[in-house]
Length: 333
Image 1: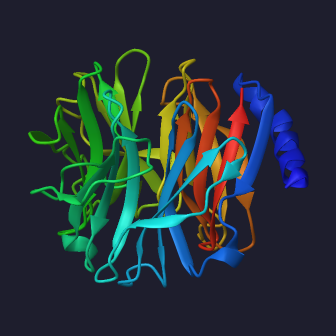
Image 2: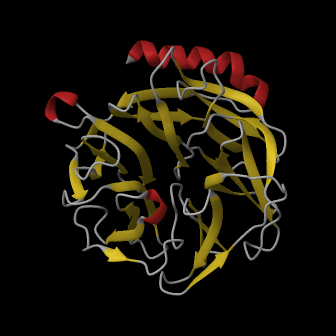
């Protein structure tokens, strides 16, 4: 682990200085002690930072889509990860894509999807009022476009919660849903600029310092798609392809407290696997530069990142580590 951290620091010295971000420290760790679990497939983690600990959830089980797959959860207090436990899943149908989010009230939400068929899976959530120690019973939404599909929501004006979602029912399409109370929702549907078939899912949302909202999403076209909102998420521009090359895989991004945007994604490789995971940076969301290589392997899957910045300014990233574990990376600026 120490050698890995040194390697990261070396990469940062050579890459990050060109992006006007000075990195002081990088560390990484695997969350699961695999000798303690019989989880053959762990994937799609989400992360939330609280005042005294870090929460991470992901889906795991026999294999993706199997009825054994549930939502697993662990927390880090100090320097130690607690033993992971399943908090959602009865073994009757699979769970997918957990998303952690904290309301202004302090209540923690865990969104997820449930069902055998991705085209018709159901949107669910549970909540915790004691920082993840105990969780509520499962709550269902009456519309599958309510809530996030993979990436964290954002607050707009400290009031409206804006979520990025998508559907695979009749091709891939992204949507946005907003709410104040998790009961009444608005669905925003951006149009597609291209006339030919265009497939995009799993948007991430970036709130820029000038108030504009940018969403970047996964596609089947070798590049990310984007759409912008200039009216606080009430409407979005036509969806277009960007110049950002990426494999067909989940991504995530955020705008740092200093205004710099970061984007974590799988880079294009020779065989187009999910074996190279990188971070890009941008000052305006339009021109993106190489920032950091997190993983670069001959094969395997290092994917589905989730990125946040805590109140101390530390960047936290979690992602699938070859479907066998979950990796947590901390970057101190």
